[in-house]
Image (cartoon, rainbow, N blue to C red; front, side, top):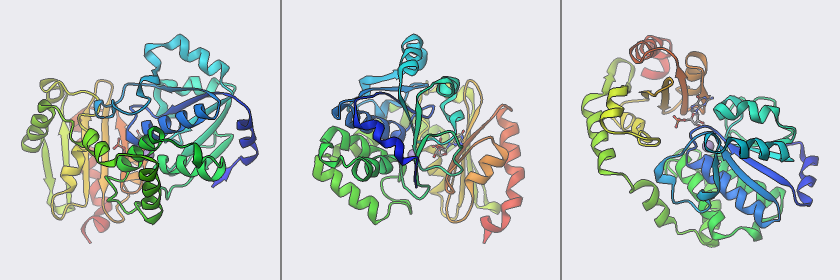
Amino acid sequence: MLEGKKNITLLDSPRKIVITTHHKPDGDALGSSLGLSQWLRAAGHDVSVVVSSDFPTFLDWMPGREEVIIFPDQPDLVYRLFDEAEIIFCLDYSALSRTNILEPVIRGAAGQKWMIDHHLDPEDFADLSYWDSQAAATAQLVYRFICEELGGKAKLNADMATCLYTGIMTDTGSFRFKAANAEVHRIIADLIEIGVRNWEIHQQVYNSSTENRLKFLGYCLLNCLEVIPEYNTAIFAISKDDLKQFAITTGDTEGLVNYALSIKGVRLAGLFVDRTELIKLSLRSIGEIPCNEICKTHFNGGGHLNASGGSSNEDLLTVVERFKSILPQYAEVLTN
Ligand code: 5GP
Ligand code: MN
């Protein structure tokens, strides 16, 4: 699970470190990055967190969020940080393409790349990798990495624990997925003992919708949902006009796909959103239906068995039709 262990001694003295995560960071991406950055800083390192894009407003309360540097906002600073970095952490992704416009910057940087991640099929780019596809969240791995590899549990404070809790909470659908096993709950108990105010985190993340976002949800449920009963599948297809009409921003479509999965009998749910650059696709499933295989084979993406994403340059209708045409290949797992 830990490969490249000898490199860890680098952290014995203060280092210049850049932490990166995937494009459009989610709760786990941001939570693991901010949790680790604060721990490393407390241990004496010079740490920056760099991302390729903005992040959802429901994460805009997290301890340390003001330290996040968005590449397009401060490109010169980012190039300098990568030039100087001795270690570049790659959190919550295992394929460099997931960092979007940061990919060439990371590839070109001389510093060691240390990956901590839980996605399947990791690329071979890291000098050190702490990888476990069974882990519920990268934040869980960051916790393990700090406690078991760095012996640093005593330095975890309430702010760091809050970030890690948020990562685990969001990636487990609030502790309801299969990966939320006994170890995860033990870690959560530790984090609460360290000082996490868990009820406040749930409030911040899940009860912070704008009125507009809720109306958008109602609109999507009424107008954009299609159930395909013969394949126990349900999808949302959201057009550019839909997004414009409700002034939808990053993160506002988060969780929408779960409404399709919540229909009794539905085993595969899809969300297709016509973003500015391309069609972004999210898939969720139950049981053995391989979202990651579907995304990898047909939509230039990947992820986990039951939660994956991808994208396409085609137009919305074409992508949706192509998705439907794939369903017969999975008839057995979808209908039995
Ligand atoms: P979401 O549907 O929430 O965007 O992503 C679900 C899961 O699929 C996450 O674990 C995410 O990391 C992964 N994922 C999302 N989009 C992509 C993509 O374009 N490529 C790959 N390889 N994985 C993705
Ligand atoms: Mn994750």
